[in-house]
Image (cartoon, rainbow, N blue to C red; front, side, top):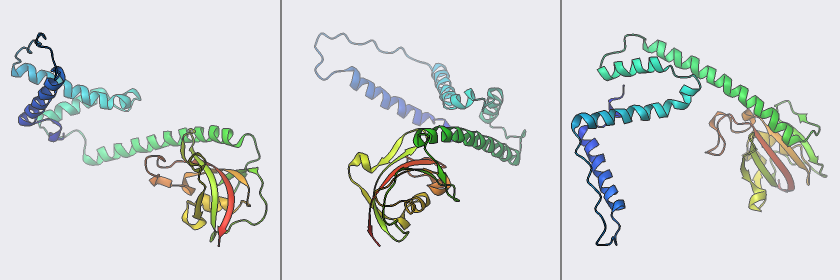
Length: 248
């Protein structure tokens, strides 16, 4: 049990003091009328009652933090309470070894990953159906999938080229995480400077073409994700229009 989880008496007193001062600021308006009725002071509280309330609030907070996991059957409440009581007593864990605990965590992580992959698969089916609109879907050897919304003409860009495009990027749940269309300004970049799915996909397009790409996570941002907008292991949908091949 992490001993830092509980306040020390001094820290707890400091928190109570700060909260009391903030309450006074809110409860007493700057221009309160002279005839305002003074609020009754709180009844004195003994140490036993204070510790009871504090202990209850700490347990409630821990339970609320674990409530979602518990609702999904990921926490055994009886065993959790057994471990909590043992930790509070200061006794050492003699029931399970560290190796067993690490093994249990590994088993659960694998199961969670399996469920996440299954959910990702369901989202992928729905997302591709919505994005591709029953059009002919083509797939490359790398796993990149695409449909030709509008054919172009002329040369196709090479990996050494810089291109000008309009695009909209979406997560499988339909959330738009980036869009030059919404900004109203086309994007320019070298094909060697973007994610593999873009590098490969843009080389399939002719100037003026519009494609919709389904880019697997491995050809996008993989396990690292991208900031707060793109979670790790996210497959992506991109609607792309190749406006111009700017330069070699």
